[in-house]
Length: 140
Image (cartoon, rainbow, N blue to C red; front, side, top):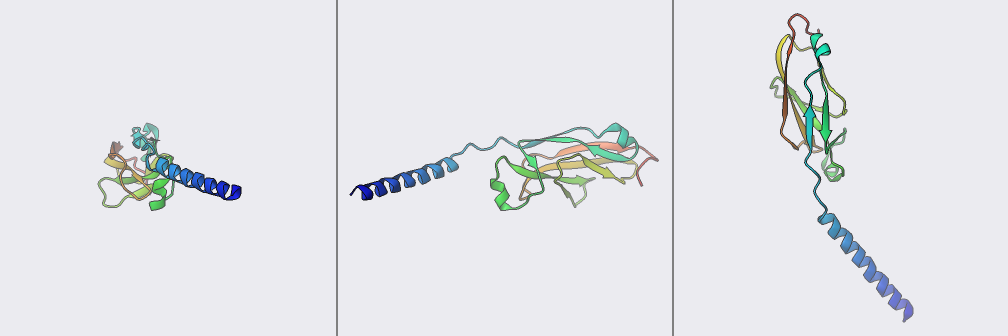
């Protein structure tokens, strides 16, 4: 009887541990909201027609990981969607470094930056950075 009792108690403890861990996983605190803080382009490179936009992600690690399973990673991972001058196409910024753009013509420009999760769903509002490439000094 002693072995049977121990086995029964072990079984009950194992069920209780599984139930508790499942309950904790379901009631875990949500992560703080993700956002990005974007600086104005650096003046010196801009004077040469090159745009360097530095940013800082809060509650979001910028990495080149994609897909539904990545949504469960904690702390949260994602990337940025970047669009230039209202273009219908975007690129995914996954380096975590500054956004660098060269070859724009002289004149005013806008870069829209959106933090997104690994499934490309927005995590916060887009930030629009406006700047002017000086005349006659645009990168070629």
